[in-house]
Image (cartoon, rainbow, N blue to C red):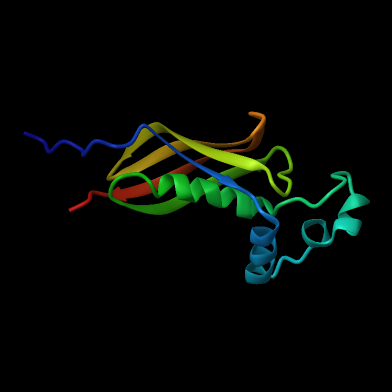
Length: 134
């Protein structure tokens, strides 16, 4: 009899508020000091009209959601499409839905991040390796 795969999480989510402090810390850690993220007056002259969060900072909410899967989760691949800007103070929710069991403990999840209005700000997919919890 073949061993059955452990049960895997069908859907996981993570919600957070994007703060000015987080944006500033991310800029310092990443070295991405683009004025559209840090300078209100410079950002006012852009198509966005105000400061926006780094896309990769917001994408971190996907990682936080995937980390809630039971077991040890190892990121293998991520495709992202940045659909809308995220502004200081926005609430974002990453939703990861199981799409496929790829075998060998690897799973593909559809990954979507929405803002407080339900608008998609990031769309994509991720492949993770899940090692069962002891």
